[in-house]
Amino acid sequence: VTAAHCWFDGTNQVWRFEVVLGSVLLFSGGTRIYSEDVVMHANWWPSLIRNDIAVIRLPESVSLSDTISPIALPSFLDTFDNFTGQTAVASGYGLTGDNVGLSRDQFLSGVSVPVITNEVCRNSYPLNVVDSNICISGAGGKSTCRGDSGGP
Image (cartoon, rainbow, N blue to C red; front, side, top):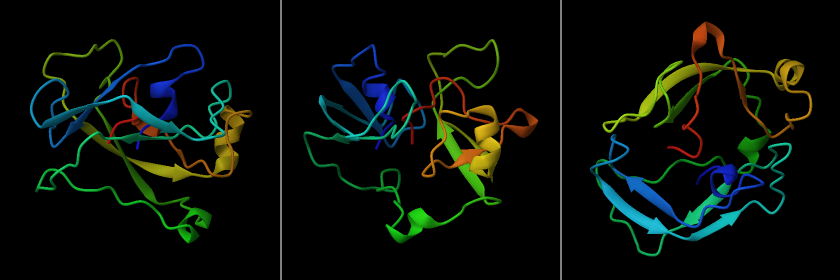
């Protein structure tokens, strides 16, 4: 699973992904598999960032290990839950601060953030928030950053 905008952002089309499995380092370690087979949500809308999800099909099977395991996806009934007030964990290989670039030893980072209501989110992003979004607070300077999209 990845973000659709990582494959096609409305202007730029990627032609191949390198999928990193079982490594906390972006540029080394783990199992690395290339794929050109990406299925984007049929209603991906780049200009409004709606339905920003895609599935990467791998050309080979993956052996599970203590560092490689399937992600947990919600059941259909879970999609109707209101996660407001719960803590979400966001992770990715992106930037870790303002005025900081990627390094050769870029590592997987994570942050715990509170889930806020979509109504609060719509105050800042009136055209982009739909009912299926889960919005997080950036209070205290904690949030995702450029390069985290599509990550684990």
